[in-house]
Length: 151
Image 1 (cartoon, helix red, strand yellow):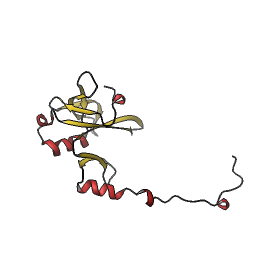
Image 2 (cartoon, rainbow, N blue to C red):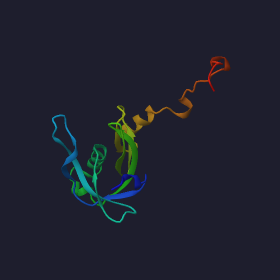
Image 3 (cartoon, rainbow, N blue to C red):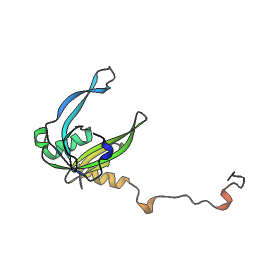
Image 4 (spheres, rainbow, N blue to C red):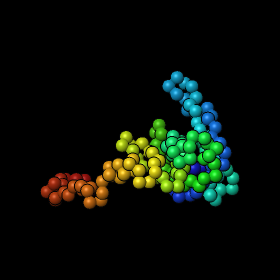
């Protein structure tokens, strides 16, 4: 499935158990295939369910919301969030499936994490973001700008 057709806020449901599957693309430091967690997901507006590799942030949120058994993840409405990122210099689309009552934040280390709204982590992430009136924008006086700029 082309993740570029997905939109933020689009609803989705997991419709199968999650199966650990060896990756055909990614290997660990010893050259062994990394394990991907694949589940069939049905996206609102799409004709059929597709295989999706669930990333670590999504899995952690699903475990927190519904428990460790991936059978219990099925049938729950999730909110889609997509984000363009660079992996190894290549532009890709990261897909997050967010349970109701949860939100995606950047944790203290800058990694995406899906946490309960209003949780300690969510509050810490909010406190770590500068508010609009806290951002310092430098003001340059005419005397600070060299007069010999080529434009």
